[in-house]
Each structure stands twice: as C-alpha cells, then as structure tokens.
Image 1 (tube, rainbow, N blue to C red):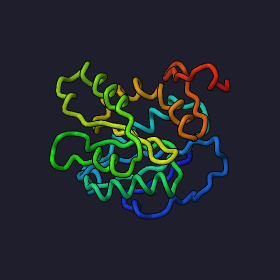
Image 2 (tube, one colour):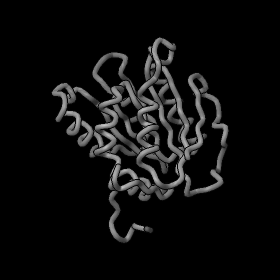
Image 3 (cartoon, rainbow, N blue to C red):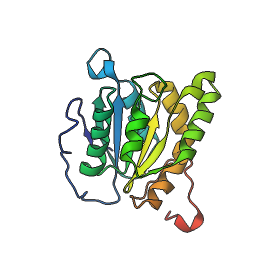
Image 4 (spheres, rainbow, N blue to C red):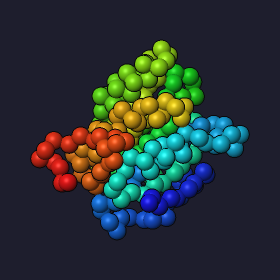
Length: 203
C-alpha cells in the first residue's frame, strides 16, 4: 500500500517524510497536476488520481506517493518539481497538464529548465500512442527528463489519455530508474510488462 501526502498549496513546504528514505528500495513517486482551474478549486483534479490509480494497479514493489496541485505558472511548476525531487526524494515524478501549445501551457519548459538530461524517446512514443486516437495529439509537447537520480515524465491533462500513455510507456520506467541510480521497481505483468535485460533482473 502506498503512503500518501496531499498538498494543494504547500508547494514550497518540505516533504513531511524528510530524507533520507528509511528503505532505499521503496520508490517514492511524485504526482504533480498543473491546472489553473483545479488549483483554484473550480473543479476537482481528476488527472492526479488517475495516475495514482494506475500506480496502484501496476506496481508490485513497495512505493509511496507525494501529490502536488499548482497553477499553470512556470515558476510554481519548477518549484514543485524541485521540491518533490530534491526535498522529498521522489525517484519518479509524473506531471499532468500544461503540455499543449496555448500560452498558459508551460509544463515542458519548466521540466526542461530543472532537468539535466532530456529523453526524447518518451515524448516520441507518447505522441505516437495518442495519435492512434486523436489527430491533434501532434500538438502535444509531452517530454521526459532526468534530474539527478530522478525521472520526470510529462503527461497530458485528460484522464483517458493519461491511461493510454502510461499503459504504453511505463514498461521502460523501471529499467530507466535502475540506470539513474533509483530503487528497483517491479510491476504486475498483466498490467505492465516492464522490460529489463537479463543481467539487470533480480526476480
């Protein structure tokens, strides 16, 4: 079972769990929703819970979760990402929202600014998956990058698209986390058949 820490306005507060993690094989996931209206309470955030629901189905190894909800402001998104990674020790941060072409869509810019490496293959595959369902998926600017030993993945805001994409790209996440020095993640093969080369497998 995951441990939850909820925050809608505590972007700048330190993670209540602190560092270092007691169990290095417990993966801490960050889920960051970027939405002007949801952050103002104008509607419920459905995207963040969709990501958490996927993790509950897919993961078989120990995990914890930190949630953040911020407005579509580059500074707020960057601060939340840094908080989740540097203060809370999240090995994987999944964002939702702000990946389109509109003026308020700035999640990719915030992600690129705080990351040291970009992984273009994630963005390519995420758009390819969405293109099977809607032609405007080519307008999406979803991406992924690495900060230290943490992986950041940008997802769109629509819950259905989130699930379609995670079903496709999450198979590469556990081995990516291995390669950047994170905890060993295992998944239910009936939900996500994650891939590792034979020499990297423990099970």
